[in-house]
Length: 273
Ligand SMILES: [Zn+2]
Image (tube, rainbow, N blue to C red; front, side):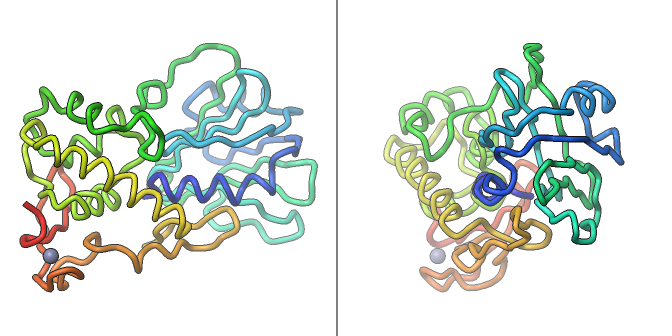
């Protein structure tokens, strides 16, 4: 599932292809992907609108098509946004086609079809998951003090807290495991029992692993690709995620896997306390 660095990579690679382009038509082949408004209204309202810019917030992409008007996209498991030449064959798993004025069209493709799209048009419709997003890990809002306060009443595992999009926006299973390793903290630790120093270490670790993921164009395991169809190369920098039973790159101890917050979590029993 694409996390913040992968979504950021899509934003960067997609922008030069579609910003400034006007939408001539929207063909929707799987209407249920449009969560709001109806698929018909979605297509109708977008006709003639120009894509002015693309922003990212957490794992959401926001394609601005006018003042207070934007398409919100969440890729979920296997969604992708691709710019494809009109002369090229249509991409696999094509679900939505945005016919643009330029030489390329914008496609939303999805293998497992969990992706979601919304069109907000001056109507103050509240998209729950978007409106309640916590601070960005790479921004100024995420500090040790903030994390400590957010954990005050959290008696569950620290990993569940950093996966909660309301607390920090953009981390999923990969970067949560990597951040906990970098901070030397076990994923099962009770969230409100970390020391001040550990909150600080964890905040710095989240910033570090996310920045590294962005620098390496994201992490590709199976399906994720950017708007140019390229895969990210962060996988070779991963310390724990996907490395169950392999030796820790720092101390050589075999990495272990447990379930935390319903997610497989890989950690080093020696380096993480
Ligand atoms: Zn280790």
